[in-house]
Image (cartoon, rainbow, N blue to C red; front, side):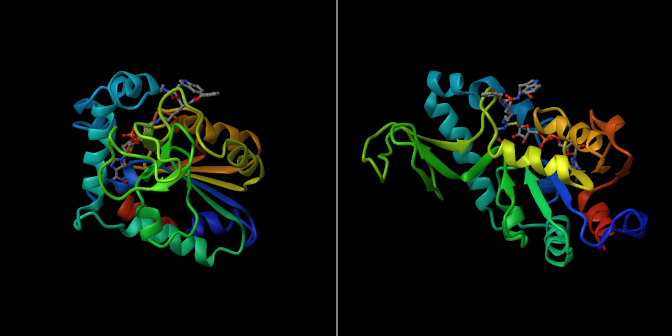
Length: 240
Ligand code: BV8
């Protein structure tokens, strides 16, 4: 259960919102975006993570996400102790726990979380621009693929929220931020909105706010408390 430093702040049926970012998957072997050598230092996000980039050069965008899908399929990439600790908290906490992730990997699910909310979409899903049907995708996607639902070609894109697109389930997230008693942010730089604004929203609604991160994020000043260190150490210690 949350560490003693917290249990005296929480009632057993209090509600918790957890936000995770790329840092929670770093020790599983997946790159972050803005750390040294991160994804956005290797490729321009305008080219691969915007609708305009996809319209300009869909092959480049498909290659970018195909490479990340292959990386995620690497047997060496497994959920880590932080993913498993959050799943344990979900199982044992009597109050509501909403896990919101900015990550598009499936490590929370594979670590035992039953219903993470992927606000930026999922790498292993795709949708058809023609009929909007969402499908599972395991291998590569390309502009030559036909939609299995409408049969039309050339419309398949990763089911991932790009810059300038509305993240998923924002109303549900906003409600949870207004109602929660504890907001915990894990492994995110606090750079990308609207996720970066969640801590201020939760705090102004009365929640106690904690940041678990390798280093202070851009939003560090908004948190009541921070615990810095690798997620595989600080998250299990926090959720004990
Ligand atoms: C939108 C695609 C509006 C998926 C991504 C104010 C309000 C609203 C919007 C904006 C705003 N200001 C600017 C905007 C626009 C924009 C934005 O935020 N731009 C940024 C660059 C300033 N936001 C948007 O466009 C969003 N959409 O607002 O729509 C709208 C309204 C109406 C109608 C239509 C639209 C969409 C944002 C989503 C974009 N998609 N990616 C993919 O390819 O993965 S965002 C990208 O950054 C990733 O998806 C990731 O989820 C996200 C956040 O990154 P982090 O997860 O934080 O990763 P990062 O590398 O930055 O940090 C890692 C952290 O981990 C570090 O702090 C590090 O210290 C730590 N760490 C490292 N190792 C460890 C560790 N911690 C613990 N343990 C370790 N071992």
